[in-house]
Length: 342
Image (cartoon, rainbow, N blue to C red; front, side):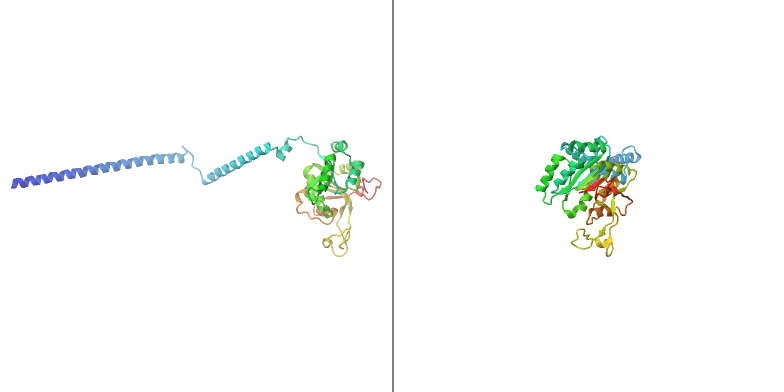
């Protein structure tokens, strides 16, 4: 009996020993896998940290600040805009359009003209224009010679009809095709009450289209001695801002229906009052600086009932030399006068 019991105890001990060995083996295996995994992870972390260290120490790519990042983004945006503009420019060139600035650079520098004379005219006055062409303005070759040899450019100035493209507009276009001496203000509608604005637009656009020392306004019923005008203007080239004309100071009329009624009469004083000194409207001249001044400030320059008063008002608060030139008084052909009203 004891022998059988001892045998059973021995067998139990062997079984427990094998289970313990199996558990230890499993634990060792798991431990080995855990250690190997940690070692692999540590190796990856070391590689990552080495790369970060390279960037921080300058061995790899340098670390960028937030400001640097914004600058790069702005540069990319500017590059996109530049690329778009280049594409638009290429398309414009294919269509035949060229930048005004580039055109001016490519042109041969031209000699500055002495004066641009704008003869303000209107619809239905072709007979006046033809008379002026015949009397003192000239046409074709004669007109071109005056521009090239004397530096005097002369153009009739007119706007458009209130009914765009009607017979009045077509008549002016047809006349201009034959004579090539009409400066058309495309953004101005012809009307007697709009003469002050027409005069303003003439000076503004003329200053943008021609490089000249002076710009003159003349009515289409005035005859001018061009040579005498050139002599007088040449004598004032040393003055940067000049306003030349037959200076006057007429009465301000406050009665409605009067030929020279001034809606803003109250601005010139109570009761009977006079306008400030200004050049008579038949003919006057301003220097280039003043023409550019009008061009730049055209949108805020106040127009009164009459163009001569309006122009005079623009120069009241400006450092301008007013020159009262008796030879600009066109009421009659007096001795030495350079103009005459008809």
